[in-house]
Image 1 (cartoon, helix red, strand yellow):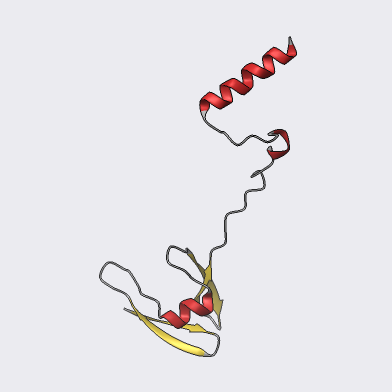
Image 2: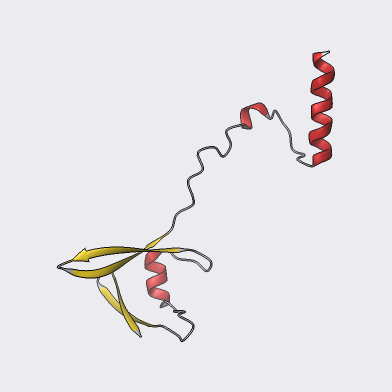
Length: 96
């Protein structure tokens, strides 16, 4: 099975293997900004009554909570369970 991929002003052809794997030409990867290990989203589109697929590099997942507790961590650099337990113990002693 062969799929045509259009990027910018060029056209490339990709052959699908029996394991449904495909190798993208280097120039296509460069124009899409793809690196080994990147994920690609396949987005279905209807154009002129035909099903088309748009390829798009998947961005990093949105994690609005990431770093939300940083303001409460102080200058903590150790994150082992022993360090967490020590911090809890110090907090309890300061409340007494």
